[in-house]
Image 1: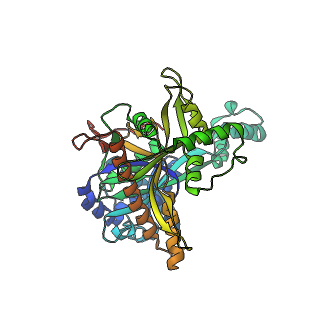
Image 2 (image 1 turned 135 degrees about the horizontal axis):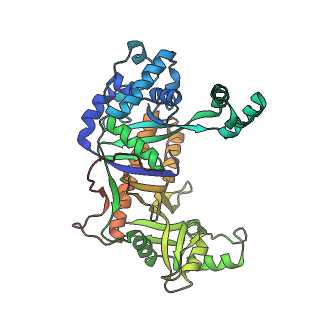
Image 3 (image 1 turned 90 degrees about the horizontal axis):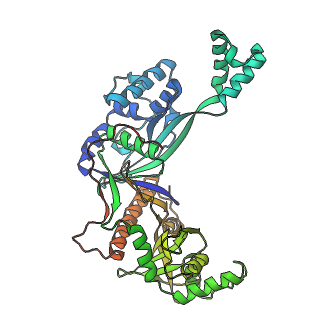
Length: 439
């Protein structure tokens, strides 16, 4: 988090905040849902599991040691909970331990706004090495025969020796819940992981709703990119840089004295000002189709993209990265004014912008570079480092603002009026999914 990443966005029923808060305050419920329980279950049952930790303690589960009996009891309830979601009856000494978060205050990242944060921890049982080869080697050394020719007692001996080659592979991702706007943000592109997080949230009372980027036109991602490109400003500067790139290496190209223009032509191949005053730049990675029937060509270099788009009259942008910027006038220490471009958000626009089978909209290649700069600038000026909740709430605040700006910008580019639906909106479903999708 706090840098470039990939976010899955799901809907959230605002009214489910009450049930979510009640579940967070239930020690038994939180113990069973915790990473402390999930990690123990993965080890004991040699199976995959999903648990949570509070946003401020990504490894809180390591703060509590469990006896063998407690491990068995807690893991048994965690596995049972995945079936019927009933609260467990657990020993008091286990419930009073420091290994899991409990209470709204452990997960709420803002004092007055219903914003919550947590770590979703996936535990995947995997082989660290090729287990069959380990068994074969052990059979040769210990019993001087291939594994297939061993008697059952001997096989068990070899199997126990090979068991050390397996382990729980732990991966965890930040999850942000915004009950004010009704959205969940999960930093992941893995369908199985995203689905598991959504199921875990549902068990905690947060009602998750499937959503998607939706606009009236079926090919709207390409329309947005090409409509923006048609309104490109600084065309001569882009073409000049593309011509220079044909004859010189990147190091040999002489940089422009105008720092703002140099930043534009070196990074983007399109820059358009919209009616709202927001600027939209298109950069790589991109795919460009030279003819209607031709397969798209992948390109990362901005001048090369300009060259390809100038090759034919039919050239079209199939996918690309859009950066939304606001132009701000600042006063330097010398007292002069100059324009700076402040990134609101950067994100990829392509045919993978939705994961419709699990009901999430995607923010791929998403970044808010200016956010980190602003936070560091504030720390230098105030000489105070924000508390952990402030880091998380500030990120969610900017993330929500960025998504709203993206939605509004898309509507403007597609020329939609107020009566036409468009943006991240709910998608109809016949019922809850019965099984996790394949990754």
